[in-house]
Structure formats: C-alpha cells, structure tokens
Image (cartoon, rainbow, N blue to C red; front, top):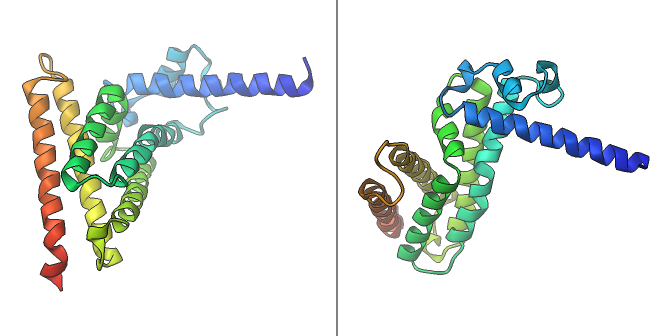
Length: 218
C-alpha cells in the first residue's frame, strides 16, 4: 500500500469513527438532553476509548454543534427549491408542508434534537441553532425577494417575512414530531393530518397578509 493510499484509509477510518460518535450521540439524545449526557456514554456506545473522542471533538458542545449542522443542512436546499417554484401560492404552501412532513418522517431524531436543544442548556449549541436558523432565514428572504409579489418591498420587510416562514416551519416540524412520538398516534393519523391542515392555514394567512402588506404600510 502506498503512502497516499495509507493516508486515505486512515482518513476514511477517522471519518467513520466521527460519524459513529455523532450517530451514537443522536440515539442517546432521544431520551435526554445534551447537557445531561456523558462523554463516556457516547464512546461506550461506539466501542472506543474515551480518549479517542478528543481526536474528533474538543467536547460534547462541539459534537452538538456538528449535530446542528447535520440536522438542518439538508432542509435548506429543499425549502429553497420549493420557494423558487413558479407555481401559485397555494401550490408552494402544499409543497412546503409536504417537505416538512417528509423531513420529520425521515429524520425524527434530528428534529427532536433541534426542538430540545434550541432552548437547552449548552450555550454553544443554542447559538449554533440560532445561527443556522438565521442563515436559513437569509436564504428564504433571497428566494422571497425574487418573487414578483415582493416587488416594492424593503429588505427589512422581506427579512421579517422570511423569519415568519422559518418560525412556522420549525414549529410545524415540532408539532408533527409530537404526534409521531405519541403511543397510539403517528404518520397518517387524524392528529397528523390536523397538524398539516393547521400548517397550511397558517402559511396561507401569512400569504394573504403578504399580498396586502405593501398597501398597508405605504
């Protein structure tokens, strides 16, 4: 094996261990907060020595920040794509709610982590979530600004609208998660459908207000 191949193997092994630590932490966080989780719990679940943890993360806070990025990164591009669609407002609303539904079905542990740690006890993670949602709002604002209905809007007002959308998406994801965590409830249940209906009505209310906002403040 050449030196470059050896380096590549070591890097791949290191990346697998790092991902295993993230996955193990996420599993453990299903039942507890990050501030109550022990480093040894994570390394024991992976089957590595506690000292191996520090080859990948300075502390559990840094691991939590990595989980924040992992939890939210894939949602950004999907929602941006929906907002960039040329369909009418109702179609965009339906697609947006469907995206959130699918994300909660496919990534419940990530949604649970964000919902719990958004106001949790680890400052670095709280800040990382706030920063990620702020970046999300910036991306949504750019997509909204490009839509004809935003013509004449100030950047400040478009940003305010984007933050409303992002907040609704986060709250809707949490509501879906609450249903899927119920003992006898789940995807497709009446409660799940009720969350979807409420989300669509809330987004429709924002959309109606958006259509008249410029006239109201001019």
